[in-house]
Image (cartoon, rainbow, N blue to C red):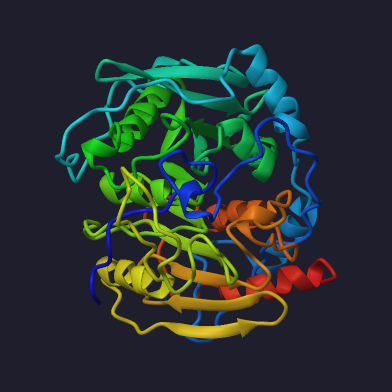
Length: 421
């Protein structure tokens, strides 16, 4: 399929984004109210057709359903990120523009970025500090900041899995946690969660130096930093994000091949033109009524440094991604009553690729607090629970589709049924 524009679309109150276009991307500055209860997520079903998108897992249907029932109410924080926000404030984490500086120039960053290596904390016996801390890592000569949430006490389960959660443009990490509740929920399940902070609260997803620093280099440095400071599982790194944050997650997975096991992209806009032979499982959650990054592409114009950037159609970019994995299967679409349409690209032995068009969803995280300026917020399921179950079902780097993989479509339907929807 034709390669689309390797670019992204800013999300909220991006000063280089869409305010001037009248299609605001504003985030609510300051604290957020407690979010609506999260009621739905994924559970497993069984696969009987190669046209279904499978979740590669060793879990049975009953186990996944039980997990969903126990987990369908994630720990959603109160205003400002709740306990996470209080801990971050105590640790001195900024709830505004991140530290760092833009880099002038007209060239692009290297297509592939290596993660720095050093003695693993698993070998040295080093452990990460429990709870929530503010961390910095030096990239070149610039200090970059990230918020780190570590299970407390540390589980005795061996090397720890990591989730990178990327905030939307115009958001801070704390505001992203207020919307998703991901750190509060995931740490209870043994995950370490890192919230990288974009310079001026935005991401350079185009990787053009004129647009800012190389954020992929930042993420690579972050991974290397955590690896040497604690016992982390190199093959259990996952990523999620909203809007430009979703695009940053996908961009990082393409630029760091073999480092991220699975990505959940919510309201994303792009797959980079350069994404050779990806091995990352990719699931897109996209509101059918998204006014900022429409399902069929286009959307409001952006200003410098992202002038000319437009959203790539969802099926075009994910189909292109599936082809890059080596899967030549045509897209198959099925309706999930009350939820939306699931489009999947399914090939045995290849990564799991699919997209869900969400009924009643805008440019928002399902079951987050409402943001009317970004369109409606779906309440039929929790994107946080879906993300965690997707990661659990693709537990290590290299998880691929198999003939016995359960169907994602049946899992979604079963989870909604279990929740009484």
